[in-house]
Image (cartoon, rainbow over all chains, first blue to last red):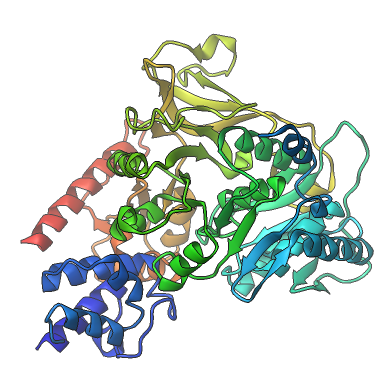
Length: 78
Length: 490
């Protein structure tokens, strides 16, 4: 269930269809995931999963898989 | 600053680089000292002189040591240089080459002819009194018809000197490329640091990445510069909590920063014992025109401050047809158009080869297109804009040009906005036009969907003259935006 939610958050923040959101999708590797989208993504993840990410989390969030890993730290399985 | 440092500074920033010691640049793949830089620049300057004597060269200004060497070599050999955004699509690059008469392109250290030899368009120096184009910079990103601003060596040197007179840049400083070097603000950071023999990190990593902050710590970066967008990122990253002992000051330019964010960073700066400079400029003025003295920023977060050393402002009543001594406004709070005077005002725009081929009398005055007034304290405050352009994420969007571009989709559209968001309005009821407009903005202007809004209206607000009432249009669009956001929030 959460997997779906994570996909939806990424798809909306990056302005991409959900099927394009795969684990190995990486920050700065496609034009849709630029710094603007990254900021929107971070804000959206914080809202959706009700967490407050710290600086290290934000600068480490370099791929979808990494985002999943970081959210795990906050006991969010997705 | 000591006397000897002052003397060394009086030399142009692109000459005799080996008068400085130590590292000049760190890049993602190594570093270069001032002595090595001098060698490379002098060799490349000779190559340039041989290969394209007095012709226009083009440089895709990437964030790399090679690109910096090319830039300095062009200035030194007096080769006029068209500076290009490396992300500009090749077709647009080639169109610009043809329009402006580019003869060679600089790629890595290669000098590649792009016009047929013998080259046709050459600089024609005729008089000592005239100034000649040294660098052609683009005013806008990808919003179509970028204007090419012609800057002379005198412009670059004057602005560099002014900036060094108000920013606390020292020879032991280290800056980092948060801004692209083809952008006038980014270029001014490069020029000022070269002028005092300071170091600079040429990084390709974005501010939101771990690598960027590793480089900041490793090279003890002493200042961070950014457009409003960078300060939104710094807020999200909670800059105040980072361990950054080498930072001494922050600078912001490239569009209006929300006064709330100005206050936030003024407070952060005070807590950390940093200085925070809010600045104002345009490519037409080389880069910088005004700054807020750092000790005033906490009290006045919504001003652009005062003219830089060597520059001067006038505010002119825009109701009067002519700009002359009678139209000068001196009393506080009365609005007029902001004019700037100084040696950093461009030579003009280049539309065709003859514009850069001939010399120009320095014009020294610039109508900024901004509406401003003096505060009670005699500082300048921007209250609106006469010109039809906005800056989205620091990138200039020409509204009239965008209107033409989007109207080509088949139905007339109207553009307005502020520095936070672009609005495109239309009265077409046909299904799908809004989506079509959105996809063009996304694909061609690379605007994130949250940075623009396409609004479908029943009728268009007009003035008694029949022209579009853009002030009313903006109000309507903002209202519909608010309503949409509220709905989305519920």
